[in-house]
Image (cartoon, rainbow over all chains, first blue to last red; front, side):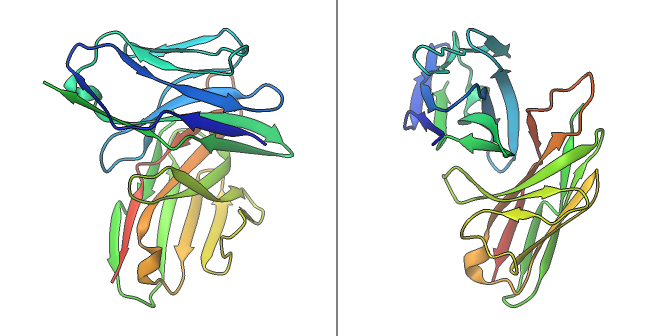
Length: 113
Length: 120
């Protein structure tokens, strides 16, 4: 079946450090891939997405590339800020009769000043 | 664009009472809305999928008689937690999928800010 695996957190970084949060997936067909961010006490906000192999999603300095050969969609940012502290969810969408999302377990990022 | 609101943002109720949570897509029409439940420091668990004008589809293990979903229009879905108990305390999040159009992709879900339910 379809699944999403994220690296476990929490991830603690100093401000301006490089960030990588790993995400791999298992899916039949051609899912779309997403990264969502959740700030404390809030819902999820779409951070970026990619709909086909080799697509790169980017937003607010974050990037992720849809790698079909490695079934990965790792999230990266060159220089994190304290305001990036949040929980990051990797997700895929697929259609098999019905349309659904599958979420990873989330990775908590804490950035220290 | 693609803003989803939820009301209320938090609610505290007594055990045995019912609570209704509204989910609205403010600037687009949603063919499908989804209801999720999130436990502390955990991922989202899909509870049900709701299509406008038809019955909701519940995930395995979710009691349809306890979590009543109504999707009366393309911009509104409601979740009613009936006879709430302390174990129903959680963060409930809805999302909406675009009905279709040239400006927003249909494979993306847009999430509401969530409703924190506390049952005493």
